[in-house]
Length: 104
Image (cartoon, rainbow, N blue to C red; front, side):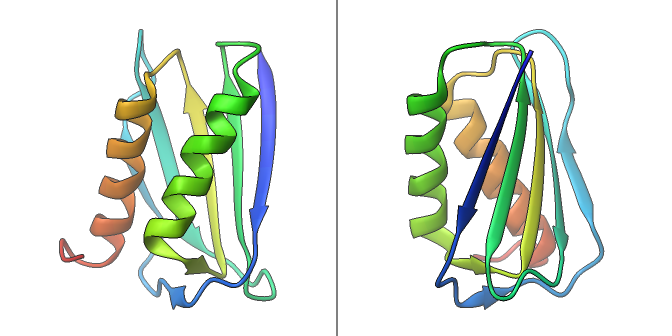
């Protein structure tokens, strides 16, 4: 197992809804917990993954996600069992859309 941590600053969108979990940890999938948190305007992402050694790919996917949503004061926790980058992006977008009530 590997744990990766990312912190993104300068977000502009704050989520107000209660914490949500999307996805299911299982073979080739992941779960995402997203919640509002007082982080001085930052968005933090902690990833626990069974796929060791893919830090640069995770970083690229997380940067792309942050550029899409520009979240502030948001904590995201990911439990991964080998999801592809496309599945990761899908689940993360799904988590934000759930927090926003289904709209983008």
